[in-house]
Length: 409
View 1 (cartoon, rainbow, N blue to C red):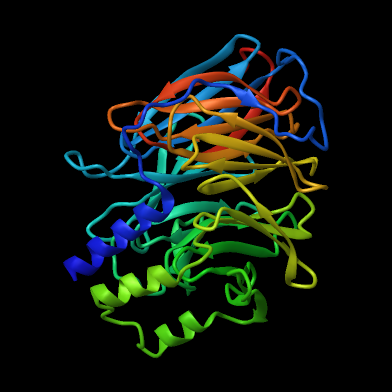
View 2 (cartoon, one colour):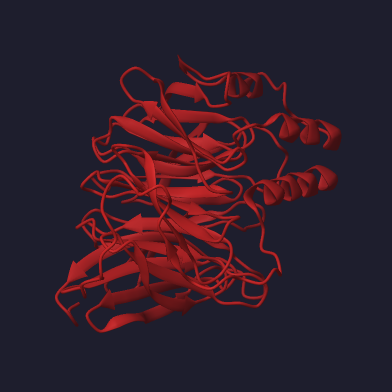
């Protein structure tokens, strides 16, 4: 068991790109040649409002609230989370409720199971927590705020199909656990609120869950040359139900990883819900899936180690973090052209979220070694990084809180 768990963690680290000690380049914003399709970089205009975002620092066991506005960017407040005082608890994902009254934090580490915590945005009062599966990661809250969908990434366990936990946020009670595939990550819900999406890193699969029935409605095989969509759950889930994958040995785990082509780490519905973008971390592609036809619309070659994705609410931009190339890519969503590649201050680029006015992208960067984590602010009109804030080590999950007048609460 120990060797299998260790193998899973090492393989995942190799695919995702763990921190290294290489020298980092200077911060810059580099438009892509030939001349881009879409907006032309301009001189940044200062913000007229304050933008508040939540960030978790995975190795510091902290939740940060960061403010960016006319006065620049600064850390507003921080709090520690987790139950193990002498161990790293590992907060990984964070999501703010639609009514802005609560936020939810997934705690990856446990004994052995992780948890989901609920806090008030006013006062950071703990309102409840619930035990989930192994290494709960990305969190998405339903459009009505009643449910939280949390992927159980199972980083340190056997390489067998894991699950998505569905939590009733009022009672903080897990009401369903849907088995999907191996190492699910990147939980996101479409704008219509009808489907939740996640991607399984070790099965090259995109999974769609019906948010009313909690059942898998469709899945899509992502490997180049093998693309196809089908109704119902993937074969990995069916095999797991029959016990075919239990007790996977070290050599079998290595063989499974070597067969992975895409290694998807994120699934992001478009602003209108008619497309689903999937980040292929291993093959350095974004696969664009047509929602209605459940077919590949486009395959986009992208930068090394594409990891998380975000879309602007106006539908114009697709933002991709590049975990292994210390950069963020901005795409014109209509043409699928990369219009800017923006270098980050530190290595191991992680999460992304776009402000409701589609003006700014907020990016988390984990850092390496003893470096602090970082939040970077990118102006989507100027296509430049315009502000950074140092945070706790391994800045990871991020979500937008709200826009307020300068200095407002």
